[in-house]
Structure formats: C-alpha cells, structure tokens
Image 1 (tube, one colour):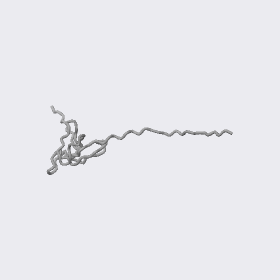
Image 2 (cartoon, helix red, strand yellow):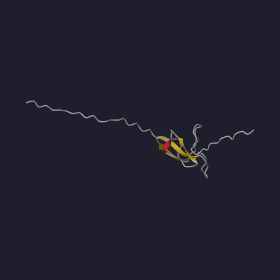
Image 3 (cartoon, helix red, strand yellow):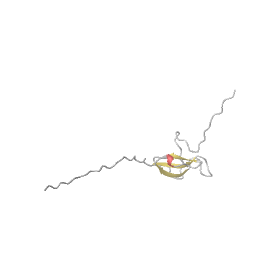
Image 4 (cartoon, helix red, strand yellow):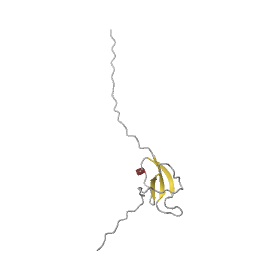
Length: 97
C-alpha cells in the first residue's frame, strides 16, 4: 500500500506599506515680539515627520532646523525662502490716474 500525502499552499495577500517619512528637526519660534521674547526667539524644538503635522499659534512659526542647532531660548533666523505661518499678504493698491 502506498501512502500519499497531499500538500496545499495558501498564498497570502502581501501589500507593500509605504515607509513613513523620517522625522526632521523643527523649531517653534516667534514671528512677533511678545514682552522680552524678540522676533526669532525659539520657544521649543520639535521633531515632526512633516511641517503639516503641527499648526503654530498666532505670532509663531515652524522653522526647519535640520542640524538641531537652535535650542529653546536661542534666536532663529529663517531662510529667505521660508515664510512664517503668521505672515500677512501685502498687496499693492491699484494705481489711480
């Protein structure tokens, strides 16, 4: 008599999960002076996977600090291409003739 063994294979559904963005160093800093805290005063350092993960309060903005060079209490000067979240849009008034 012959003993036969059957083997079944089940496939599993394996889907690739996108990798989460690596956290980056940001600082929360003042865009307007408040008391002794001048413009650029760093309130705190924060690590976020995206700047969109945090909405700064009025008078403050997030700045990218990749090197982690700006601890709380230091003064942060944003790069010329960065715009503070609290910045206002100024438009020129139309010329009158």
